[in-house]
Amino acid sequence: MDKYIITGGHRLSGRVRVHGAKNAVLPIMAASVLAGDRCRIYDCPNLSDVAHTIKILECLGCRVTFSESILEIDSSDISSWEIPEELMREMRSSIIFLGALAGKMGRARMCSPGGCELGNRPIDLHLKALRELGLVIKEENGFIEANAERMHSGDIHLSFPSVGATENIILASVCLNGETTIFNAAKEPEIVDMCEFLNKMGAKIEGAGTEFIRITGVAHLSGTEHKIMPDRIVAATLMCGAMTTKSEIELLNVRSAHLGAVVSVLRDSGAKIEFFKDKMYIRAPERTGSVDMIKTQVYPGFPTDAQSPVMAALCFGGGTSVIVENIFDSRYKIIPELKKMGADILQDGRVAIIKGQKLSGAHVRAMDLRGGAALTVAALGAEGVSEISGIHYIERGYVDLDKMFSALGADIKKTN
Ligand code: UD1
Image (tube, rainbow, N blue to C red):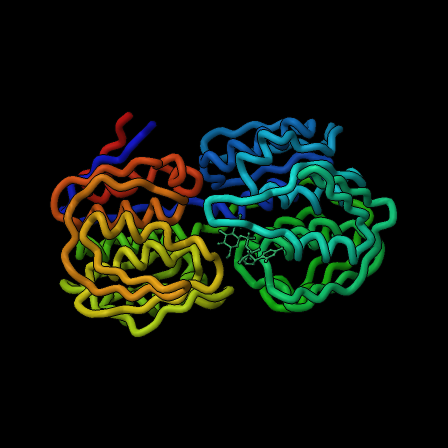
């Protein structure tokens, strides 16, 4: 298994480009099946989750090529509506294919996504909403089988603005007769990116990025081209790397509007951050200040995906900071690992209290994607050598995180 070996304490400098967003490209890849045509996607990140999604598309009968960040998906010969169990288990967010396959093929079959590294990941909101649109869904022996013969447009009120459920409803309804409105929709920028892609294909979606999304069904979609939005969580992770190493770096390909909550917290802890068009400069303080309270929330609140890297940065702070994790229960698996590096963190349920101090290198294990990235930024600032195992988690969402940091001057090597 691959590991990162990191000798901490090197200041970073220079610039690095942020790659396309994982959480945008995955639903966009699912959306491409609706085209029944060729779609070209630019700035597609070369991630293991993208590789798994390519396998799913190929199993469904799509032709896919991927080279130099350009992904081409030709869904004109799509013939299957079934996602093999092993592929579904590899990547539980593939549930997003339920709406897309129901919309395109009129049927879908896949296994139910149970527990994942973030704990039990329910899909009750997805299923309730799709059933309200007339999708007949049978759940048996861990499998979901859906029949869209009687699907119809309608109003959907989400009790919680789930990102995946919002995407599934949109994908299921773009080709339904009539108007579907989602109330209390998720507002994440990745949903906006998916809707822009669908609208270029000929869909009629209004209100993406707000809590009311109106989808007017169209009879036909066709192929298109689209550039994936920059990954705001990769940008946040690199910013935290600047914080733990007390460095000044420049990020290219960022959107300031997507990073508001993270920028605000890091400014509160002493960072100087400026944006110029799609560039950002961050200069970390010599001693990171504490932050009174960070509560993870749905967008535009503080993103749960940035919580672990920011926790790692606050471990080096000059005071006591408090984090409340409101979205995923299991985001705190990183705490025992940070403690091995000397971090002082007290956890009670959703609340973590972090007392800043110096960390030192240790052997630690990534337990999930963002936690793994957070251990990397902690190790960059720690004294001495750290070894991080379980980096396959990191590779699900970061293209060569080691190379991004070594291009900035970090001492980080990937070994087997
Ligand atoms: C997406 C992102 C993930 C991010 C999350 C929140 C992708 C591939 N993943 O995940 O990186 O952390 O948004 O920004 O885009 N929930 C239910 N029932 C449901 C659906 C969700 O109870 O049917 C709960 C979840 O357990 C969680 C919360 O709602 O506590 C948020 O989940 P959701 O917004 O659906 O996130 P995902 O789409 O899974």
